[in-house]
Length: 73
Image 1 (cartoon, rainbow, N blue to C red):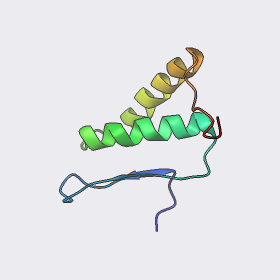
Image 2: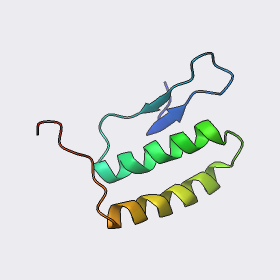
Image 3: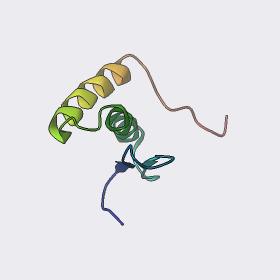
Image 4: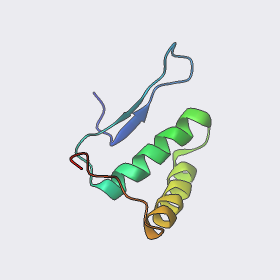
């Protein structure tokens, strides 16, 4: 198993999936989900560029009030 917050299956897999660690703080979880979605659509973009874009996107979304809803409510 990989030591990563998230992974995206290669596009050549029959049913590729995105995997995200279950124990991440909400803001990091948002960043990882964005990173893995970006990998899924733009497989060949270097990790450094993906991280830079997703860090900015997460910051903007978080400042705008985007939050994960509590599942108990």
